[in-house]
Amino acid sequence: MANQREYASRRSKISLMAAASGTSGLSVDSMVRDLRQQRGRNMNTIINNQDIELQGFRNQAEQIRVGTAARTDNRKIQRPSWAEVGLQTGIAGVQGFAAGKDIQESLGYGGDPAGTIKKESPASE
Image (cartoon, rainbow, N blue to C red):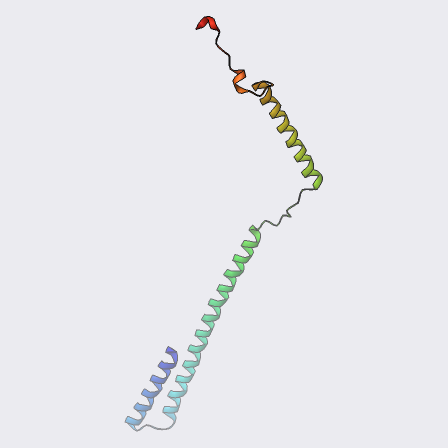
């Protein structure tokens, strides 16, 4: 946009100078041709800079994608078999039963916690 405005401004100044000095013909055409060529070079420079910037963005996005893919854990999640689940459940049940037996033995076979507390002898009263 700025390049277009600058081109239009310079072209109008050249036309104004040519009209003021009475110059016509090849010298004005030469100046206008030079302006067009300069505008073309400026536009090419702008387009090349934009292409370079876009390529940089593409490269950066690709690096992020590759880095993310490298950090992703692609191991397969294995489901346990029904036999494994049954065996683990059985082991946990046996361990729970054994723990319950130990608690029952420490409390007494009646299951009365008060029965395990020593009663004080009548002599000490």
